[in-house]
Length: 101
Image 1 (cartoon, rainbow, N blue to C red):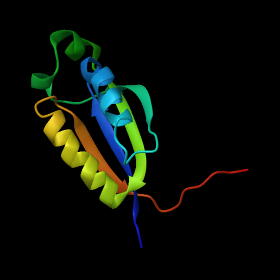
Image 2: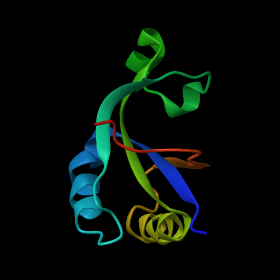
Image 3: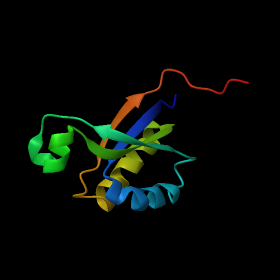
Image 4: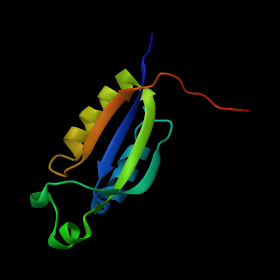
């Protein structure tokens, strides 16, 4: 049985276009979703002074529904292509998914 997963990526806006281009070029992906998000946290060393004052950092969230095998392949490619970019990811199983007619 092929376990399906949701791969979530959080990226800085500075790499958004490069990440979109890279994801679009991946044959393992049939598509993905992206949205602007705000990151909140208590790690001031990773935020600019303006971000610390605002209490948030602007970021972009990408989500991809794919098989576990495809996710492992995508993550390996991201490690090679976006090393040092601060790209954050997590992978969770999907219990159910479908389209409502």
